[in-house]
Image (cartoon, rainbow, N blue to C red; front, side, top):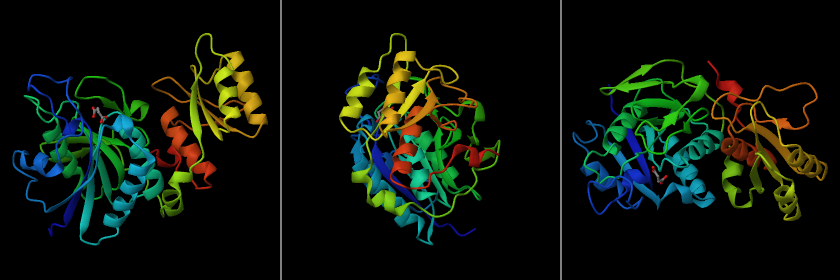
Length: 321
Ligand code: SIN
């Protein structure tokens, strides 16, 4: 089989982190080591695959910005369009990986694999997890039939729609919730458990170009003793969309709900989702607010920003097997 190029776009994260001592897995600085040094330290190299690397950013992903997203989407689209590129791997911090994954799926809708990977331990650790994750991500990026944005961590392949960071420390820090992972990577081989997400057509070029002007959308959580105060303050500041992270199956503290109804009457689009880690809000007749259709609060926020930017958004329900 002819081997086309794989591209690695590096953005920082713990996978590129450096600690003073090899025994320190938590007291490190993220986003220090460049991608070429990470690859040079990869036992067995890239497994014979020709790889093009670009150090696109060097950020701790808690500080991920729309500017980096715009640059990333541009480079992803650039490389996807090249006939000699088989797939793309993106190294990323774990903290906002699921947001970048959903964003890239929403705007780039790749017909080739775009694989985000990461690490929970810095590159300088005694036993770093980054090298194995990079090897696994490369295996997915060159897997025949792979397409769309996925995340690979601890040998598990998650779709951009389902992936969520669920652990603060363990190497296997991600889950696909009820949907379950797409598959596993075992000794360089991908074992599929379900189909790749349904391919989506086109790309949202206008949304990428206009990212600096995206509408302001904030997330509000419902909790014991919640009030309408934050909602009212945000409406006064001109917020255009609100994502309500509700309790359980979409319930909201009555005081917060009153504020959200007021906001909606004032023209602010309100989308409701659950703050539960698993499950989705089951809509009922007469629901007052739009439903996130299973998206988590952080992904529902991106979907709402795109919707308010008049971009059609990919829905999770489209990709269920
Ligand atoms: C980050 O998200 O950039 C830091 C944390 C991590 O990668 O685990």
